[in-house]
Amino acid sequence: MAVHHPATIVPTKHELLQAWVPHQPWLGGADASLLTKLGSYRFDDPDGEVGMETHLLGTADGQVLQVPLTYRGGPRAGAEASLITTMTHTVLGDRWIYDGCHDPVYLTALIRAILTGGREADLYAATEAGLVLEPGTTHVRGSGALPLSSVPALAAPVVSHNGTTTTIDVGVRLTLPRVITPTARTANAALSGTWPGQETPVVLAIVAGPS
Image (cartoon, rainbow, N blue to C red; front, side, top):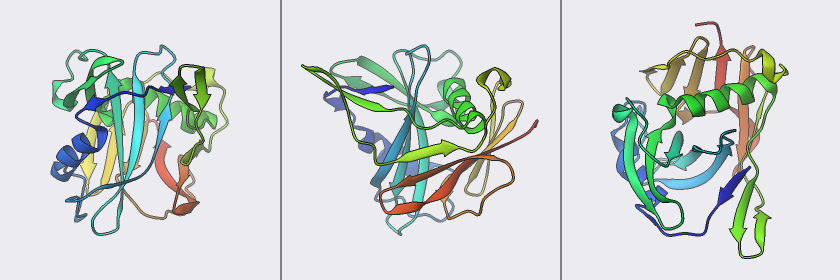
């Protein structure tokens, strides 16, 4: 499960996304001068160390972007190139915010969800009375049915961009459309999702491999 702590964060998630996204090579012609949150989904880190959240953002010209982020309590060694910013969180302290496409914890969680038929993590609010389940509005589901023990170990990620698609080679090939369009059902294992305003499932990531 994921836990939402009522807190002040500087910069806010929206502020860091608005500052970072317009400069990314996978935008294509999308107008990211003004971004609106449409939804987001999270995965669990079994070790409880890394926060993972994929943001679905509306652009000024009506397109939908997919932006995975990871939140860490300290810098990840050798990952300076994928560091987006640092954040001050009044409950969790300083946080290091990374591009999730380069973070092996995020990639492992995403590929596991796809291959085993997993879904998004439940989100709980931390309150004085304890943890309270927050109603979800964004839902994702993997198409696979493998047991967790059959999911392959991943290699170090090699990330490339081709137009508005990001490809990540980790022993298997993972592709993420960064500008989301309705996609027909794929023969490969995939993660599909819905969010407010998008009630028909849309393909968000595909695993094909080995790479």
